[in-house]
Length: 465
Image 1 (cartoon, rainbow, N blue to C red):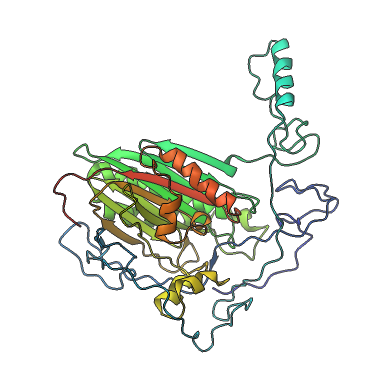
Image 2: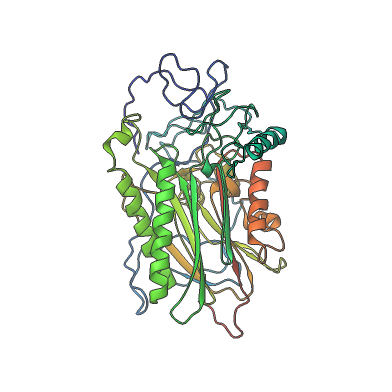
């Protein structure tokens, strides 16, 4: 999409680029000490560009099988993991060849390294970024001293008194979340989140380069009408070039999980339920562009709130995935001798280049334009048509649902399988923590979110989808 003309902005925080008032000593958004001189951080956000390359729906759930056109590109699947797409068409079982020689880009395409795409107006150049934004743990001696003070005073609740600044490790944290001593903003609730729900677990972390976490997730479990358990996970990645991406991802994840928890117990087919849940998530993100009018006053030039979404359902021997954008689902069998698989195809510039045969996968994802997405949820997106696919694995495994903050450090299914702990099917929360740690150890350049759904041993004689 095209960029809107930008007005001359006031002075901005060198850490988070929020506008500053004259005379500010600390940034009101991130607490950055303005007396220090530091280069502006370089984020590598998810960007939007071009038209969403999705087909029409024409899907009727369940049978009779509907007509379908323009179904999503086939995912890379091992031979033992057949599946069907939204139109009921069997997906091919042999992976597309990788490493084919790249053809020259089409005439008129911007050269490698060009800061602006002439077709979309999206800029790809970014200022230098700092090494990290580390947050130190509180000094236990200070916390202990505060607790002793509260005990001597006979105070039952020591929670407030034990809140010490993670930056200076001495000052008390005020109700507004800032240190009274040094003024630094304290870690927010979304900087690191963990949750378990039945057999499902998820972890999300701000990473080491972003000043806030724009990812969100929702996990849950329910039962089908016959009592069969169903596990659910939704992961969303806010589009950083849009307004309020953190709100968009949170609204989408909540709307999707609520729709799934309402539809599945009523007997709705899981693939139909997931399709409708993504539509509900899209509507929730669209609504953010309408409320309140004052929400855009600080950034009138930015796009409407937007995010990507990916989700999975494990129920009754069926594995269903759905997505819009470039977050992914991987299948990792418990028996690591069997092949792993990526079950989704990115709505991204890189995926389009690979699909068109213009670049190899390695070349496309090494390009600075790789993560410019062609599909997203938001009021300024083209008509949203969710991709969905269903599978019937013939063995137990783990379903990995994640944002690019993780798969950037393990892009192929084989690489993902190598970093998933061997006991992930019985310790999903621990495994999710390990995967987030892998991304942080690799540099933590983006927010990182991962949800894990164990897939149980299928019943004897279970057929293929």
